[in-house]
Image (cartoon, rainbow, N blue to C red; front, side):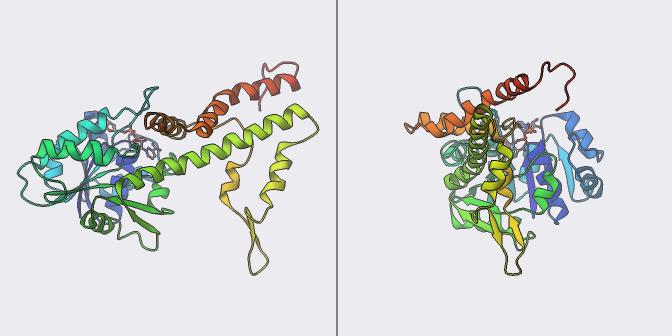
Length: 331
Ligand SMILES: NC(=O)c1ccc[n+]([C@@H]2O[C@H](COP(=O)([O-])OP(=O)(O)OC[C@H]3O[C@@H](n4cnc5c(N)ncnc54)[C@H](O)[C@@H]3O)[C@@H](O)[C@H]2O)c1
């Protein structure tokens, strides 16, 4: 298929390179000329294992970068929007997504054939249907469901191992406003065989992404709360506590041949410094803010964030209780 991807950042560029690897013809669009030039030279502007090898293999044949959004969109059958969605302290900032939707919509004007627009950015539930779709209709002069389809396809990659995560996904979530959109997205992902593919509506696809991150953040804060109590009580080691917990049959299964398999989820059930990175804190805060705005506060997730904010200081306090000085200490 011919694909265009708006935003050549972590998600957009990795997706573009991997889609090219499985045989699609991909144009990655970015406003950043430097990024575009580097990609077209086969250089990865970000460090991701295996990304540069994919660029070198496909740039010039199935993959290219460009600033010309309109030409890229019009030459493709499907456009992914993969621009940033930062959290501004109160809510998720949809400014980049709105701009991209307007630009894509304008490019679709008078195209004369069906196109599918897919939101890949992480956006709060309702954004694809209530924000992106009307902007596309307004800018294109066309009708969603007739002239173009609107879908939502969240990305679950982890920075650092993003190429592996994309090429070997645990699941593919495909949201769509109708069956035609879902079928088109399923075609784009057809080369990823034997991967559970979950078709649903756009709002549910958006919620799956937030819920996936929120549950991991919750387990981390839970483990840290337990760890903080263990440290305060003394004589009880949270590492051993969690080892004992991991042995429960819910976490460790005995296979038919007697082998014991521990679920990867247990790595989120260990005490530590808290969660960081570019996604988990931002996404949980955005979900809590969205719940508040919708009249459905989320006190559990709010506390998950509060525990996490205090955790680095808690760790320092514990170290101060155990060592005369932290100067020069390596932990
Ligand atoms: N980074 C991750 O690990 C990760 C994982 C899953 C989901 N996500 C989500 O994916 C989305 C993108 O994240 P990212 O980390 O790739 O962001 P990023 O900041 O690395 O990349 C965004 C890119 O979009 C470009 N851009 C912005 N507006 C544009 C426009 N109108 N036209 C063309 N290009 C434009 C920017 O120049 C930038 O290169 C976010 O919603 C994020 O939450 C990120």
